[in-house]
Image (cartoon, rainbow over the protein chains, first blue to last red):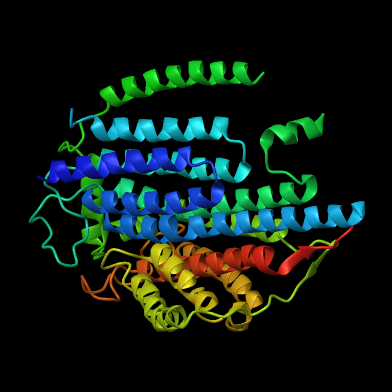
Length: 91
Length: 116
Length: 245
Protein backbone atom coordinates (compact mmCIF):
# COMPACT_ATOMS: atom_id res chain seq x y z
CA UNK A 1 0.00 0.00 0.00
CA UNK A 2 2.56 2.59 1.06
CA UNK A 3 4.76 1.37 -1.80
CA UNK A 4 2.04 2.31 -4.28
CA UNK A 5 1.82 5.82 -2.84
CA UNK A 6 5.58 6.22 -3.06
CA UNK A 7 5.62 5.05 -6.68
CA UNK A 8 2.87 7.49 -7.64
CA UNK A 9 4.67 10.37 -5.90
CA UNK A 10 7.95 9.44 -7.59
CA UNK A 11 6.36 9.31 -11.04
CA UNK A 12 4.61 12.64 -10.46
CA UNK A 13 7.96 14.14 -9.45
CA UNK A 14 9.65 12.82 -12.58
CA UNK A 15 6.81 14.14 -14.76
CA UNK A 16 6.82 17.63 -13.25
CA UNK A 17 10.63 17.78 -13.47
CA UNK A 18 10.37 16.97 -17.18
CA UNK A 19 7.70 19.63 -17.60
CA UNK A 20 9.85 22.20 -15.76
CA UNK A 21 12.75 21.60 -18.13
CA UNK A 22 10.57 21.45 -21.26
CA UNK A 23 8.85 24.76 -20.51
CA UNK A 24 11.16 27.26 -22.19
CA UNK A 25 9.47 30.47 -21.09
CA UNK A 26 11.05 31.34 -17.73
CA UNK A 27 7.90 32.93 -16.29
CA UNK A 28 5.85 29.82 -16.96
CA UNK A 29 8.75 27.66 -15.87
CA UNK A 30 8.57 29.37 -12.48
CA UNK A 31 4.99 28.17 -12.15
CA UNK A 32 5.93 24.61 -13.13
CA UNK A 33 8.81 24.74 -10.63
CA UNK A 34 6.29 25.72 -8.00
CA UNK A 35 4.26 22.61 -8.89
CA UNK A 36 7.45 20.54 -8.76
CA UNK A 37 8.18 21.96 -5.31
CA UNK A 38 4.75 20.97 -4.04
CA UNK A 39 5.00 17.46 -5.51
CA UNK A 40 8.43 17.05 -3.94
CA UNK A 41 7.00 18.15 -0.59
CA UNK A 42 4.35 15.43 -0.90
CA UNK A 43 7.01 12.87 -1.84
CA UNK A 44 9.14 13.81 1.17
CA UNK A 45 6.17 13.51 3.49
CA UNK A 46 5.42 10.06 2.07
CA UNK A 47 9.08 9.15 2.63
CA UNK A 48 8.57 10.03 6.32
CA UNK A 49 10.54 13.28 6.19
CA UNK A 50 8.07 15.95 7.37
CA UNK A 51 10.88 18.37 8.25
CA UNK A 52 12.26 18.26 4.75
CA UNK A 53 8.77 18.44 3.24
CA UNK A 54 8.02 21.61 5.15
CA UNK A 55 11.29 23.17 4.07
CA UNK A 56 10.69 22.18 0.45
CA UNK A 57 7.16 23.56 0.54
CA UNK A 58 8.33 26.95 1.81
CA UNK A 59 11.39 27.20 -0.43
CA UNK A 60 10.60 25.19 -3.55
CA UNK A 61 6.96 26.11 -3.95
CA UNK A 62 7.16 29.76 -2.88
CA UNK A 63 10.58 31.35 -2.57
CA UNK A 64 12.47 30.11 -5.64
CA UNK A 65 9.60 30.68 -8.13
CA UNK A 66 9.06 34.13 -6.63
CA UNK A 67 12.72 35.05 -7.12
CA UNK A 68 12.63 33.77 -10.71
CA UNK A 69 9.44 35.73 -11.46
CA UNK A 70 10.98 38.92 -10.07
CA UNK A 71 14.10 38.41 -12.19
CA UNK A 72 12.00 37.78 -15.31
CA UNK A 73 10.07 40.94 -14.64
CA UNK A 74 13.24 42.97 -14.22
CA UNK A 75 14.79 41.62 -17.43
CA UNK A 76 11.58 42.17 -19.44
CA UNK A 77 11.05 45.67 -18.08
CA UNK A 78 14.64 46.51 -18.91
CA UNK A 79 14.16 45.23 -22.45
CA UNK A 80 11.03 47.34 -22.85
CA UNK A 81 12.55 50.62 -21.63
CA UNK A 82 15.60 49.94 -23.79
CA UNK A 83 13.48 49.43 -26.90
CA UNK A 84 11.59 52.64 -26.13
CA UNK A 85 14.84 54.54 -25.68
CA UNK A 86 16.19 53.15 -28.96
CA UNK A 87 13.02 54.26 -30.73
CA UNK A 88 13.32 57.75 -29.25
CA UNK A 89 16.91 57.89 -30.43
CA UNK A 90 15.92 56.92 -33.98
CA UNK A 91 13.31 59.62 -34.14
CA UNK B 1 12.10 -3.17 -9.23
CA UNK B 2 10.89 -1.27 -6.19
CA UNK B 3 14.30 -1.46 -4.53
CA UNK B 4 15.99 0.66 -7.26
CA UNK B 5 13.12 2.74 -8.66
CA UNK B 6 13.63 5.81 -6.42
CA UNK B 7 17.35 5.92 -7.26
CA UNK B 8 16.57 5.66 -10.96
CA UNK B 9 14.03 8.47 -10.67
CA UNK B 10 16.67 10.64 -8.97
CA UNK B 11 19.13 9.87 -11.78
CA UNK B 12 16.47 10.64 -14.39
CA UNK B 13 15.66 14.01 -12.79
CA UNK B 14 19.36 14.89 -12.68
CA UNK B 15 19.89 14.01 -16.35
CA UNK B 16 16.76 15.90 -17.39
CA UNK B 17 18.01 18.98 -15.56
CA UNK B 18 21.42 18.64 -17.21
CA UNK B 19 19.81 18.38 -20.64
CA UNK B 20 17.83 21.56 -19.94
CA UNK B 21 20.96 23.34 -18.73
CA UNK B 22 22.93 22.43 -21.84
CA UNK B 23 20.22 23.34 -24.36
CA UNK B 24 18.87 26.44 -22.61
CA UNK B 25 18.63 29.67 -24.60
CA UNK B 26 17.88 31.83 -21.60
CA UNK B 27 20.02 32.12 -18.48
CA UNK B 28 16.99 32.43 -16.18
CA UNK B 29 15.60 29.22 -17.65
CA UNK B 30 19.01 27.60 -17.10
CA UNK B 31 18.85 28.52 -13.42
CA UNK B 32 15.41 26.88 -13.23
CA UNK B 33 16.95 23.74 -14.73
CA UNK B 34 19.71 23.90 -12.12
CA UNK B 35 16.99 23.94 -9.45
CA UNK B 36 15.63 20.74 -11.02
CA UNK B 37 19.11 19.19 -10.81
CA UNK B 38 19.32 20.17 -7.16
CA UNK B 39 16.01 18.51 -6.39
CA UNK B 40 17.34 15.19 -7.71
CA UNK B 41 19.91 15.16 -4.90
CA UNK B 42 17.13 15.52 -2.33
CA UNK B 43 15.27 12.55 -3.79
CA UNK B 44 18.44 10.45 -3.79
CA UNK B 45 19.39 11.33 -0.19
CA UNK B 46 15.93 10.66 1.23
CA UNK B 47 15.62 7.42 -0.76
CA UNK B 48 18.87 6.20 0.80
CA UNK B 49 17.54 6.88 4.29
CA UNK B 50 14.10 5.33 3.87
CA UNK B 51 13.13 2.13 5.67
CA UNK B 52 10.03 0.06 4.95
CA UNK B 53 7.37 0.40 7.63
CA UNK B 54 9.37 2.99 9.58
CA UNK B 55 8.03 6.35 10.70
CA UNK B 56 9.45 9.86 10.93
CA UNK B 57 12.30 10.27 13.45
CA UNK B 58 10.35 12.65 15.66
CA UNK B 59 9.62 11.50 19.20
CA UNK B 60 7.25 14.21 20.38
CA UNK B 61 4.30 11.82 19.92
CA UNK B 62 6.09 8.49 19.69
CA UNK B 63 7.47 6.33 22.48
CA UNK B 64 11.20 5.82 21.78
CA UNK B 65 11.89 2.28 20.66
CA UNK B 66 8.27 1.41 19.91
CA UNK B 67 8.67 1.65 16.13
CA UNK B 68 11.59 1.77 13.70
CA UNK B 69 12.35 5.25 12.37
CA UNK B 70 13.92 6.34 9.09
CA UNK B 71 17.48 7.69 8.94
CA UNK B 72 17.56 11.26 10.34
CA UNK B 73 21.09 12.04 9.14
CA UNK B 74 20.23 12.23 5.45
CA UNK B 75 17.12 14.24 6.30
CA UNK B 76 19.19 16.81 8.16
CA UNK B 77 21.56 17.05 5.20
CA UNK B 78 18.68 17.54 2.76
CA UNK B 79 17.00 20.11 4.97
CA UNK B 80 19.96 22.47 5.10
CA UNK B 81 20.68 21.83 1.45
CA UNK B 82 17.23 23.07 0.39
CA UNK B 83 17.48 26.44 2.14
CA UNK B 84 21.09 27.03 1.19
CA UNK B 85 20.32 25.97 -2.39
CA UNK B 86 17.64 28.64 -2.60
CA UNK B 87 20.06 31.41 -1.58
CA UNK B 88 22.61 30.17 -4.09
CA UNK B 89 19.87 30.29 -6.74
CA UNK B 90 19.25 33.87 -5.67
CA UNK B 91 22.95 34.68 -6.07
CA UNK B 92 22.93 33.22 -9.59
CA UNK B 93 19.81 35.23 -10.47
CA UNK B 94 21.54 38.37 -9.22
CA UNK B 95 24.47 37.59 -11.53
CA UNK B 96 22.06 37.14 -14.45
CA UNK B 97 20.47 40.51 -13.70
CA UNK B 98 23.93 42.08 -13.82
CA UNK B 99 24.63 40.37 -17.15
CA UNK B 100 21.31 41.63 -18.53
CA UNK B 101 22.23 45.13 -17.41
CA UNK B 102 25.75 45.16 -18.83
CA UNK B 103 25.19 43.21 -22.07
CA UNK B 104 21.50 43.66 -22.79
CA UNK B 105 20.83 39.96 -23.32
CA UNK B 106 20.31 36.76 -21.32
CA UNK B 107 20.90 34.36 -24.21
CA UNK B 108 24.17 32.47 -23.58
CA UNK B 109 24.88 32.16 -27.33
CA UNK B 110 24.59 35.88 -27.91
CA UNK B 111 26.81 36.47 -24.90
CA UNK B 112 29.50 34.30 -26.45
CA UNK B 113 29.37 36.32 -29.66
CA UNK B 114 29.65 39.53 -27.67
CA UNK B 115 32.83 38.42 -26.00
CA UNK B 116 34.63 37.75 -29.30
CA UNK C 1 28.74 24.20 -34.02
CA UNK C 2 25.32 23.73 -32.47
CA UNK C 3 25.08 20.23 -33.94
CA UNK C 4 28.47 19.33 -32.52
CA UNK C 5 27.34 20.51 -29.12
CA UNK C 6 24.22 18.34 -29.26
CA UNK C 7 26.23 15.27 -30.29
CA UNK C 8 28.66 15.92 -27.45
CA UNK C 9 25.77 16.28 -25.03
CA UNK C 10 24.18 13.04 -26.25
CA UNK C 11 27.44 11.09 -25.89
CA UNK C 12 28.22 12.52 -22.45
CA UNK C 13 24.63 12.14 -21.27
CA UNK C 14 24.46 8.50 -22.37
CA UNK C 15 27.74 7.73 -20.64
CA UNK C 16 26.64 9.47 -17.45
CA UNK C 17 23.27 7.72 -17.57
CA UNK C 18 24.94 4.32 -17.90
CA UNK C 19 27.24 5.06 -14.97
CA UNK C 20 24.37 6.36 -12.82
CA UNK C 21 22.23 3.28 -13.53
CA UNK C 22 25.17 1.02 -12.66
CA UNK C 23 25.66 2.99 -9.43
CA UNK C 24 21.95 2.76 -8.57
CA UNK C 25 22.03 -1.02 -9.00
CA UNK C 26 24.98 -1.13 -6.61
CA UNK C 27 23.29 0.89 -3.86
CA UNK C 28 21.73 -0.89 -0.88
CA UNK C 29 18.09 -1.61 -1.74
CA UNK C 30 15.44 1.07 -1.15
CA UNK C 31 13.65 0.57 2.17
CA UNK C 32 16.34 -1.70 3.62
CA UNK C 33 16.73 -2.28 7.35
CA UNK C 34 20.38 -1.36 7.81
CA UNK C 35 20.93 2.30 8.75
CA UNK C 36 23.92 2.29 11.10
CA UNK C 37 24.38 6.08 11.13
CA UNK C 38 20.67 6.68 11.58
CA UNK C 39 20.43 4.31 14.54
CA UNK C 40 23.39 5.98 16.26
CA UNK C 41 22.04 9.47 15.59
CA UNK C 42 18.66 8.52 17.07
CA UNK C 43 20.36 7.07 20.13
CA UNK C 44 22.51 10.20 20.64
CA UNK C 45 19.50 12.44 20.20
CA UNK C 46 17.49 10.56 22.82
CA UNK C 47 20.31 10.65 25.36
CA UNK C 48 20.39 14.44 24.92
CA UNK C 49 16.63 14.78 25.39
CA UNK C 50 15.92 16.16 21.93
CA UNK C 51 12.59 14.86 20.61
CA UNK C 52 13.15 15.91 17.01
CA UNK C 53 16.13 13.84 15.91
CA UNK C 54 16.69 16.00 12.86
CA UNK C 55 17.11 19.12 14.98
CA UNK C 56 19.55 17.18 17.13
CA UNK C 57 21.59 16.18 14.08
CA UNK C 58 21.57 19.72 12.68
CA UNK C 59 22.24 21.73 15.82
CA UNK C 60 24.07 19.29 18.06
CA UNK C 61 25.76 16.34 16.41
CA UNK C 62 26.57 18.17 13.19
CA UNK C 63 26.43 21.74 14.49
CA UNK C 64 29.79 22.51 12.93
CA UNK C 65 28.41 21.53 9.53
CA UNK C 66 25.45 23.84 10.06
CA UNK C 67 27.89 26.65 10.81
CA UNK C 68 29.30 26.05 7.34
CA UNK C 69 25.83 26.14 5.82
CA UNK C 70 25.11 29.40 7.61
CA UNK C 71 28.29 30.91 6.23
CA UNK C 72 27.26 29.91 2.70
CA UNK C 73 23.87 31.48 3.30
CA UNK C 74 25.44 34.65 4.65
CA UNK C 75 27.96 34.90 1.82
CA UNK C 76 25.27 34.31 -0.83
CA UNK C 77 23.09 37.06 0.62
CA UNK C 78 26.07 39.39 0.85
CA UNK C 79 26.85 38.67 -2.79
CA UNK C 80 23.28 39.44 -3.82
CA UNK C 81 23.26 42.72 -1.92
CA UNK C 82 26.51 43.77 -3.60
CA UNK C 83 25.38 42.69 -7.08
CA UNK C 84 21.93 44.24 -6.86
CA UNK C 85 22.85 47.58 -5.30
CA UNK C 86 21.74 50.71 -7.09
CA UNK C 87 24.34 51.54 -9.71
CA UNK C 88 25.44 55.05 -10.60
CA UNK C 89 23.49 55.07 -13.89
CA UNK C 90 20.22 54.07 -12.25
CA UNK C 91 17.55 55.95 -10.38
CA UNK C 92 14.64 55.01 -8.20
CA UNK C 93 11.17 55.51 -9.62
CA UNK C 94 8.38 55.72 -7.09
CA UNK C 95 6.01 52.87 -7.97
CA UNK C 96 2.41 53.90 -8.43
CA UNK C 97 0.03 52.30 -5.95
CA UNK C 98 -2.33 50.08 -7.93
CA UNK C 99 -5.87 49.11 -7.02
CA UNK C 100 -5.95 45.79 -5.15
CA UNK C 101 -9.01 43.61 -5.55
CA UNK C 102 -10.97 43.65 -2.31
CA UNK C 103 -10.99 39.85 -1.71
CA UNK C 104 -7.23 39.69 -2.31
CA UNK C 105 -6.63 42.50 0.15
CA UNK C 106 -8.87 40.98 2.81
CA UNK C 107 -7.46 37.48 2.40
CA UNK C 108 -3.85 38.67 2.44
CA UNK C 109 -4.32 40.79 5.55
CA UNK C 110 -6.07 37.96 7.41
CA UNK C 111 -3.49 35.35 6.44
CA UNK C 112 -0.48 37.57 7.17
CA UNK C 113 -0.56 37.41 11.00
CA UNK C 114 -1.51 33.73 10.93
CA UNK C 115 1.41 32.89 8.64
CA UNK C 116 3.81 35.01 10.68
CA UNK C 117 2.83 33.32 13.94
CA UNK C 118 3.01 29.90 12.25
CA UNK C 119 6.55 30.67 11.15
CA UNK C 120 7.59 31.73 14.65
CA UNK C 121 5.87 28.66 16.13
CA UNK C 122 7.71 26.39 13.73
CA UNK C 123 11.02 27.98 14.75
CA UNK C 124 10.25 27.76 18.47
CA UNK C 125 9.21 24.10 18.36
CA UNK C 126 12.11 23.00 16.17
CA UNK C 127 13.55 20.70 18.84
CA UNK C 128 10.20 18.97 19.44
CA UNK C 129 8.14 18.66 16.27
CA UNK C 130 8.95 18.79 12.56
CA UNK C 131 10.25 22.24 11.76
CA UNK C 132 13.02 24.46 13.00
CA UNK C 133 15.00 27.53 12.15
CA UNK C 134 15.45 26.77 8.47
CA UNK C 135 11.77 26.19 7.68
CA UNK C 136 10.20 28.62 10.13
CA UNK C 137 12.54 31.40 9.06
CA UNK C 138 11.45 31.09 5.44
CA UNK C 139 7.76 30.93 6.40
CA UNK C 140 7.95 34.01 8.64
CA UNK C 141 9.93 36.01 6.09
CA UNK C 142 7.66 35.21 3.15
CA UNK C 143 4.60 35.89 5.33
CA UNK C 144 5.74 39.47 5.71
CA UNK C 145 5.55 39.87 1.95
CA UNK C 146 1.81 39.20 1.91
CA UNK C 147 1.65 42.90 2.75
CA UNK C 148 2.85 43.59 -0.79
CA UNK C 149 -0.11 41.62 -2.13
CA UNK C 150 -2.62 43.06 0.32
CA UNK C 151 -1.52 46.68 0.36
CA UNK C 152 1.31 48.09 -1.73
CA UNK C 153 5.07 48.30 -1.95
CA UNK C 154 5.36 51.45 0.13
CA UNK C 155 3.51 49.78 3.03
CA UNK C 156 5.90 46.85 2.83
CA UNK C 157 8.91 49.17 2.85
CA UNK C 158 7.62 50.86 5.99
CA UNK C 159 7.34 47.65 8.02
CA UNK C 160 10.63 46.36 6.70
CA UNK C 161 13.53 48.60 7.67
CA UNK C 162 16.20 46.89 5.63
CA UNK C 163 19.12 48.02 7.78
CA UNK C 164 17.57 46.30 10.80
CA UNK C 165 17.26 43.01 8.94
CA UNK C 166 20.78 43.25 7.55
CA UNK C 167 22.08 43.83 11.07
CA UNK C 168 20.07 40.98 12.55
CA UNK C 169 21.37 38.68 9.83
CA UNK C 170 24.94 39.42 10.89
CA UNK C 171 23.97 39.30 14.57
CA UNK C 172 22.46 35.82 14.16
CA UNK C 173 25.66 34.46 12.61
CA UNK C 174 27.69 36.01 15.41
CA UNK C 175 25.32 34.53 18.01
CA UNK C 176 25.90 31.09 16.56
CA UNK C 177 29.67 31.61 16.70
CA UNK C 178 29.52 32.97 20.25
CA UNK C 179 27.44 29.99 21.39
CA UNK C 180 30.03 27.73 19.82
CA UNK C 181 32.91 29.58 21.44
CA UNK C 182 31.11 29.43 24.80
CA UNK C 183 31.58 25.66 24.65
CA UNK C 184 35.33 26.18 24.34
CA UNK C 185 35.37 28.61 27.30
CA UNK C 186 33.34 26.14 29.37
CA UNK C 187 36.17 23.69 28.95
CA UNK C 188 34.84 21.34 26.27
CA UNK C 189 35.02 21.82 22.52
CA UNK C 190 33.63 24.19 19.90
CA UNK C 191 29.82 23.86 19.56
CA UNK C 192 29.70 20.91 21.98
CA UNK C 193 26.28 20.58 23.57
CA UNK C 194 27.45 20.56 27.19
CA UNK C 195 26.73 24.15 28.15
CA UNK C 196 23.16 23.82 29.42
CA UNK C 197 21.26 21.06 31.21
CA UNK C 198 19.39 18.81 28.78
CA UNK C 199 16.05 19.52 30.48
CA UNK C 200 12.92 17.38 30.50
CA UNK C 201 12.31 15.34 27.36
CA UNK C 202 9.63 16.78 25.07
CA UNK C 203 9.37 20.24 26.64
CA UNK C 204 10.26 23.57 25.04
CA UNK C 205 13.46 23.98 27.06
CA UNK C 206 14.91 20.55 26.31
CA UNK C 207 17.97 19.63 24.31
CA UNK C 208 20.62 21.90 25.86
CA UNK C 209 21.89 24.44 23.33
CA UNK C 210 19.75 23.05 20.50
CA UNK C 211 16.88 25.57 20.95
CA UNK C 212 19.34 28.48 21.10
CA UNK C 213 21.24 27.49 17.97
CA UNK C 214 17.92 26.76 16.30
CA UNK C 215 16.67 30.25 17.15
CA UNK C 216 19.88 31.81 15.83
CA UNK C 217 19.46 29.95 12.54
CA UNK C 218 15.78 30.95 12.38
CA UNK C 219 16.71 34.61 12.83
CA UNK C 220 19.44 34.39 10.23
CA UNK C 221 17.28 32.62 7.64
CA UNK C 222 14.34 34.99 8.17
CA UNK C 223 16.54 38.09 7.84
CA UNK C 224 18.38 36.60 4.88
CA UNK C 225 15.16 35.89 3.00
CA UNK C 226 13.77 39.35 3.77
CA UNK C 227 16.97 41.01 2.56
CA UNK C 228 17.07 38.86 -0.59
CA UNK C 229 13.45 39.50 -1.51
CA UNK C 230 13.85 43.20 -0.77
CA UNK C 231 16.77 43.47 -3.17
CA UNK C 232 14.97 41.57 -5.91
CA UNK C 233 11.75 43.54 -5.38
CA UNK C 234 13.71 46.81 -5.56
CA UNK C 235 15.16 45.70 -8.87
CA UNK C 236 11.82 44.56 -10.26
CA UNK C 237 9.71 47.44 -9.03
CA UNK C 238 11.73 50.55 -8.22
CA UNK C 239 15.15 50.75 -9.78
CA UNK C 240 15.24 51.94 -13.39
CA UNK C 241 18.03 52.71 -15.75
CA UNK C 242 18.57 56.26 -16.91
CA UNK C 243 17.29 56.70 -20.45
CA UNK C 244 19.69 57.50 -23.24
CA UNK C 245 22.77 56.38 -21.30
